[in-house]
Image (cartoon, rainbow, N blue to C red; front, side, top):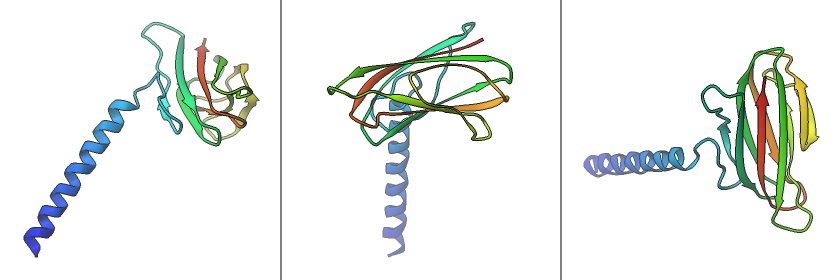
Length: 138
């Protein structure tokens, strides 16, 4: 019984490791293949901007995170590529302390109040939508 339990644990651990590795590879920054993404926006070296793309199902959220400093200006531009007649993605931006500093927009230009990790949460409340989001921090 103990040998079979040990074998079961090893197989379960191996399957969990494979699943985690698959998730890490398939959820790379910059492209969201399905709703429910939580990943970092990465800027190319020596640049002040980044672009992410994805697809969001109605009722789900994609969360993109990035680090910035107090006093920097962040411009965010979200373009929905409709997959149904009226689907429009929108975003909410939360400061590192969780305070919402921008709500239900497709474009914003903000002076950032704090240093830390900002969360840009995308939703598409009416229909599914694919999107492209450009973020610039200067």
